[in-house]
Length: 308
Image (cartoon, rainbow, N blue to C red; front, side, top):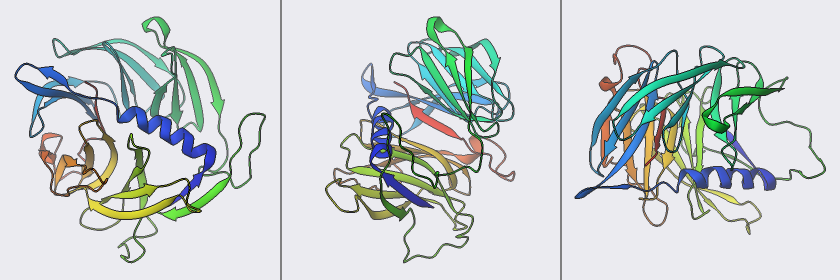
């Protein structure tokens, strides 16, 4: 996949990814314990992570395919159903490790991403199946569809420049997320899945999937706005599995990656070094078999994020 770098677009990426990297750990008695949220088809999981291993605290059954969920403190969980137009609201009690459905509303088909505004009163869902963006009122613990913004036409970057009263894009660079010196087994099918910028605004990571290789990878870029071309590919690291749909960073210099397929782990934690490089040998993992039949296609998790 080729990655487009623009001035306005880069600012949006920095804000979103910076939010991913700020989550720390809770003090769980004598050890620091993180709460990690995971989802796959029909399930939302809560794991306790102590820096070297995972313990499952909750396996909560939900309808459909919650391929993206988002947690809102102190106890609200919003989930898409990628198989339909439904978005659901649940109570996720971190103290008792329980989940409860509050309500379900219908929006555009096949939402795959949710994001709150800064005030936490609005939520947007990106629906690739319905070619639309839905805007939800989530104030007062609610879930009300306010507006649907159509996004017709072919998906992908708009080839025409956009200039508005307060927004403009200037293309700075186009760069592959793969190493051109190492040809892929299936270059036409390969694509990126997730992107995250570390809190130092220097180290950028992108997940690569559908490569046809035994395992897929995480690309590490160095960012320097002063360069004529701000992105430099530093290295690629194996995820240990295939189809890494999502990964996230935390403030403990760790990268959590969710593999949907392959012979390796369903979840792996890679240590991030001070220079942004990754330690390819996982410091913790969860077997693929925990999430489904390994003989079935893509049994692994689709979403992972540390929430406390």
